[in-house]
Length: 428
Image 1 (cartoon, rainbow, N blue to C red):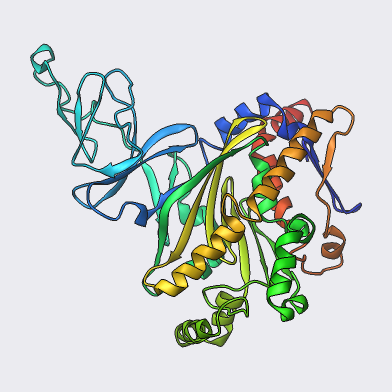
Image 2: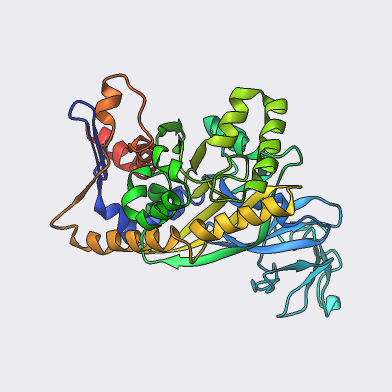
C-alpha cells in the first residue's frame, strides 16, 4: 500500500512502519493533511447552554472560542485579535456579551463583531465597514446529535456524509435519554509521552483488556460471582472513512441500563425502569443493545467515544511525534436521577478517571510502546493482523481482533501516502 503500511490479504498480514510514530516529517504532513482537512470534534452543545457562554478550545493546533452568542447561535471564533494577533480571550470559560483584547483594548461582541477601539479617529471613516476586522469565524461548523465539529477545509464533505456508518453507533449513545445528553463538569486534561495515534488504537483494542487491566477485572469478579461467566465478546467493524467500532458484552454494570450485584439491590428497580422505558421507545431488540452492550467508537482522526460503564469522549492532539495532549469529557443522559448520576460518576472515576484502573495502565502501555519505537532501525514494523484469517474465511471479525484498528490505518495511509502514490504512478 505504501512505505508506511503493508496489507497482504493472501498472507493475512497487516504491518505499520514504526516511523509513523516517530517521524517529525510525518507529523508535519498529518498537521497539513489530516488536522487541517478532517472534521474535528470541538465540544458538546451543552457545554455552553446559556446565551453569552463561551469556552476556550485548542483544536487542530488553532486557538478557538466556542461561543453561544446573545442571539443564541453557536459559533466558533478564531481567538486572535484582527489588529495585532494577540489572544482576545484569556479565560478558559465564562459568560460575556463582549470580548476585550488585553493588548490594545479592541472590543468585540460575542458573535465576533468589532464594536469598540480606542483612538478610532486615527483610522479611516469607513474602517471595518466590510467586517474584515471582526473576529474571524470558522466557517465549517456542523453538529450531529449534540456533538459539534469544525473543519478548516471549505471543500470538505458535510459532517453527516463524513460520519457515514458511524452515525448508527453515535445514535445508540444519544438515544439513551429522550431529553438528550449533556457534558458533565469540566474536562480532564493530561499528557502522554507517546504518539497521538496510539490512543486511537488502544481505545478500540479489546485484546489488551484482560492482561493490562487485570486488577479491575479481578475486582469485578469478586463483586459479582456471575461476572466470571460474562466474557469480553463481540464484534469489531470497519465503518469506512477511518471510523471504527467494537461492540461487546462485559462484566460491569451500566447506569443505562444493566444492573450488577456490585450495586445495591434497591438500585435494581430504577435500572429496570430505565430499561423498560427503552423497550417502550425502541422495542426489545434495540433496547437490549443500548442497555447491555458496550461500544467503543473511533471517529477518524482523533475522537473516541467509549460507551462502557460510563460514557467518555476523548480527543488527543500531537505536540511532538512522541508527546500528545488529551482532553476527556464525561457524557450523561439529561434528567437522570441523582442516584443514577452517582453510580455513573463512581463508574467513571473507578475505571476511566485520571486515578482509575484504566487510564494510568493504558498510558503506561502507550509510553512503553513509544520507548520501544526508538529501536525502529532494528525492529521496523508493528503487526496489526489479528483476525484477518477469520475475515478471509468469511467470518465477522471479533471485538478482540484488530480489524477496527486496520480501519484507521487504511484511511491514515490513504491520506499520508497520497503524494507517494502519485509520484510512483508518474514514474510508470
